Image (cartoon, rainbow, N blue to C red; front, side):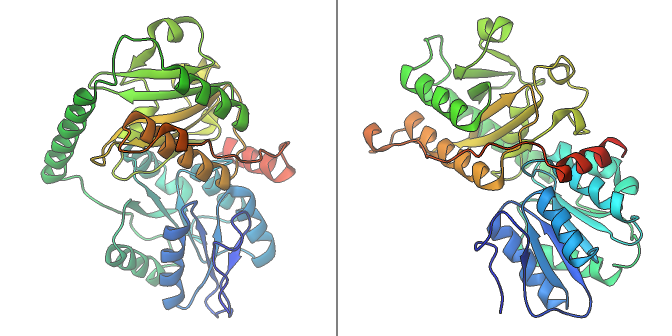
Amino acid sequence: MTTSAHDDLDGPTNHRPRRTRGYVLIAEHNSRLAEAVASLVLTHGFDPVIVRDVEAAIVAFAEHGLPAVAVINLSLPIVDGFAVLAALRYQAPATRVPAVVMSSMRPLRDEALEHRERYGIVAVLTLPLSIEHLAHALEEVFREHRRVAPVAVERYTATDRANDRAREAARLAELEHSELVDDLPPPTLLQHLLAGIAQQFGVSIALISLVTRDRQYFKAHYGLSGDLLEERGTSRASSFCRHVVEADHHEPLIVPNALENPLFADHPLVTSGMIGSYIGVPLVSPRGHVVGTLCLVDPGPWLGSAPLVDALVAHARAISMLLWPVNKPIAAIRLVRVRIPTRQPTRITEMSARSAHHR
């Protein structure tokens, strides 16, 4: 009997019966993608074990031993994919458990390439993936799963650059046509929504950020002070939100602990202590462009689980409907009510943090 990842979103998911080649750890918060990977893993004679954060991954290590291969999204709740890799390397050398990493965000993929030897990364995949591409990549990895093979990575071609420029031009044109970027005070309704969201998720700052050609503009905000409040935005180059806008796929950027993330650890807003954690989810226009984010920021680490990320995505969809109302009465739009559990860092979290610190 096969247990679906949808049955238990917080713990490891096992697919029965057990096979003789061991299991593949799939660390992925998107249930559909995780199930697609799991189906391919089964065809190669491995058992898939799906987890949505590092704590569940370490539980899987304890219950099943070390995996034959690890497939990891670099953007995960509680701690990011780099910390999962660090926890894995704490348990086993790279030559024993090779890793495949995935991301829609080029800077994260570049960081993975830079640290590929340390983490035992054998493939860096770009999201979204076709089933055919994913199947080919995994087939190569499984063939060499007892040794670290050369890193497989997609090349960024002239055609890719041209497509990105065209997509960005269309995105900016729609944002300009919307007239959402203005000099008016923040809409009261959006301000109230952000205050409620910040309280629900236990963070100090919540923003509706629109990314223009050269800056990010805060359409609405909660918890800002000082220069950020006065300027109502930052440069695009220094923003976390630009990574969500520039991604190859509509996907949240989850940075549970910015000080331990190799891409963001040296960012001025991180070293100053303002940003300890960040999660940004896309605000998608009627034409399918990501014009900005609904984002949460806090000076400390964010220990929210994968279901909370799903809830924030639902909030972003509701806010997108408010920004671009298409025959949808505002009264019909409601906040997604979620219970935020009181959590303290567990020994598992502390161990993974220590292992990440020593990578």
